[in-house]
Image (tube, rainbow over all chains, first blue to last red; front, side, top):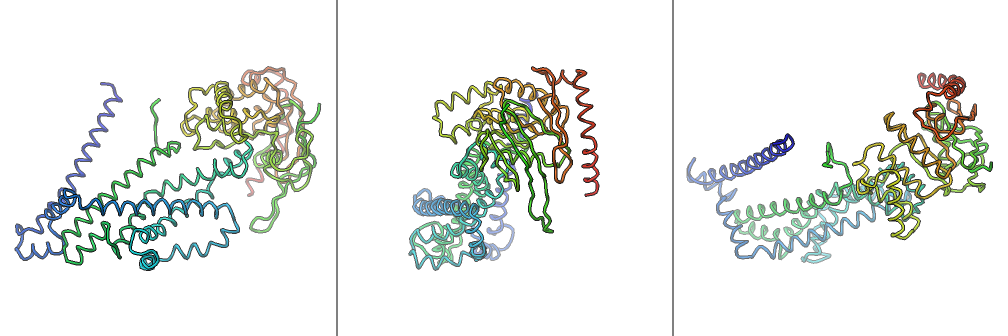
Length: 277
Length: 267
């Protein structure tokens, strides 16, 4: 076997081992949870108390299984997903547009600066009740909340991206004959986009937070609504089941972002990257 | 010989640092480049060579003086000129192909003819096999070749080059210098080549202009280089005439280099 093949093999084995450790860690957390909530190590009463506060893992898993088996969860997941994606798309577009505009127009930027800072400093979750009044209890109020969370992340990154365009690259494009529209399209936007993509993980996460918090504060559908319902009847197992489903869902969204990032930012050098010729 | 580029009585004063002091980078400088002439501008570090080039490119406006490009007074970016930068100036998000195509696309050239011309230029600088690579996947020398093709594809009458090869190792650099001479001799554009390396200046040029140490830089000497062409930049350094020219120009430059060094020590 050649040396490179051996090394690739070794790396694959190391990755496999790591995945095994990941599963073992998760397994031991569940085992610990199980032991603490069953009358095996300590008294029945202590176990019951623990189960009251933390739920029982087997029942939680059973709830999740029933949700998916009966198909009841899909409607709620779909709503949460739509809210997340809408908030993400609209927030990103708004942040991109306004970020570009303010970064390229010193007057507008000087004028807007204190207000942008104030809006960003404001804890925006408190807007949720207002949005509920304005937009009702449907998906719009959740999308609006998500947008206020996503917008600022994207906005600040775009602003930074435009400010950090290399002056040499900019001068080069100008010497090659770019007019201001072409400069925007070929220099400013791509530079800003690389910053937007590096904040994508955060902004998708924020859109998700906006959706779930919005549902939790008042809605008729969505995973946040399921959790709210369960909490109202002290059904701690369903609450935990909802949390687990949301977490898995957030992880799935995050890996979709990683995939998009890898495809769209091929031009960006990775640290210590070597390439097969 | 008619002048392709003429800078006359150029003064550049940058306004106000934090202390409100003005800084005069270039003072009353006159520089003329004939059609088809290869002129190198040498001078100690920080003497305002790049400032002068930016004036010629129209990227910077002079405080006083007159800039003419192909006989016309210059307003804004110099459309007759191509500029090759010292630092990496390729757009990192475009492949080598798209970088070379950039200027043509800015001009709205139709895509079929863009493809044809870019492929021809990539072949000419020996990068056909790397057309789809991004700048970070190219070596320093390859990036300079892309930059050269990016500039030359627009067929500018005047080439402005700001220490374009200074970041390259010595072997790659000599290869690039020879390549530049070969490309240049094909259609004899007017060149202003900025460098701090006197040997490079002599090996490439028809004329070498020596600048004084900054601030308030001005030309202090001009030397015609009568070495025969075509030249091989590595071999020509061994000839007696080269050594003679080098000694002559160096003796004019030495005081300025020492002055500039003394200033940098004080600062």
